[in-house]
Image (cartoon, rainbow over all chains, first blue to last red; front, top):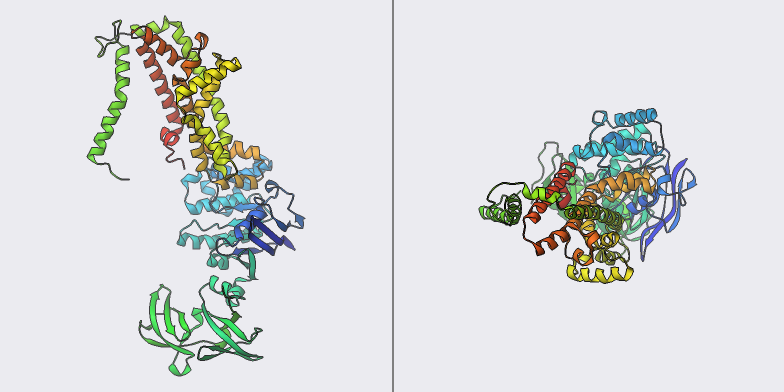
Length: 353
Length: 266
């Protein structure tokens, strides 16, 4: 059963439409991410669910109940803010207990639940501290405990990891997933960080310009993007302009300039299309087996992998190869590239701007 | 932090001496055994401090000044907290006009304000009354309070109030338990600055007092125009001590740096 249902949710600020007929449902226990660049309307959507913004149209249902006439303080949602928004003059324990106090939970039970929430986020030993005496990661956990202790029907996370440094962010991703699953709480995450969304979510809703672009599991969204925006926003991708000449049941024929390429079967109609090809799906091969050849322009070492920029007649192609200790091509060297046909994605061409 | 050069240090030292010198002279003069203003004093005597007790009008004036300071600082603070929350909270039509209105007393020469208040209070029949004085002082000190409270409000994370709301707190509880404690350094700082400004105010006050409501600065002023005995010095010394004591207490509780400069409040 859907815990949260957004139906044609719309928000206009004057002449601009921030959220445009946005429809999404979140199942019980699910972890869903709203992913998109800044200004795509994801934060406005979260604000409307939380009750801090009033929708211009559409509806928000929580457990089947319309939230339109329910004020923010009665929605009973757990929210973790980007800035954590801890109460600076209260200890960790008082911060976490605030929601229970507002619900008039009696002292004994309150202490028990605060202890359980702090235990869940591994902060029991710091309950007497003030927020200013804690690190970013610890504050983040306090904010989580404070949101979870009220046992919300829905947990809203607003860019919760964006204020942490890269290493801590990775640790907290795993931690956040563990906590969410232990608490079994339905969660909606708002983020612009595609790796965060992929690592944490059961499902990703990609937003652009206030609209829902694609809704899929992280694997599906990455592997089978339905449009050019999703293919470049989720991970790296080579986008190649092409012309779809012919589609058959067993495959498609594509032309890029003078080069003919075989593609997977596609429902697209003949005409201009965009091909998306992931850099890690391109292999180096012999001249005879090559789809295309080119010269290595730049070579960037990323530790666990190498990133090559190869100038080919299809344009510049990014190629990623795992660092397995073997010799890799040098800049200036000629390389031959191939890939399996099914790794090409045929997408609708970007409309001319 | 950047280290200051020799000249910068020297300049600060000279400037501090320049600011402190008059106080040193006043305190020095107050200990004179003689019947006239003399510096350095020819001896040490508490004669002029005892003389304060023989002049009950000085004590009465000090009490009026204290009451006036407390009443006007409190009223000004009560007005400025909601104003600062509104102005610092976000854009709305008339926001800049509201802020300009609150800060405008700073831009009007105080003598002009004094004359204006005299006419205004006379018309209302409040001239020379305590509450008339309170009204005028509130107008004069509101800019100081607003500036300090606003500084605290602007530094406040708006998500904090939202977090409290989402946890189920009604708006009054959010204000009492979350917002007010978070801006309290600015509120206390504003109150103290307002109190001191009111306690010290002469230019406007001299136009609108009557003998029953004479404040300490006005009393000192009128005394020194008539005689030159060191009583003014000893009264001033007591006032300086009182101010220093007030500052020390506030510093102990909140830290003056935080209140008046706003540094390290997070």
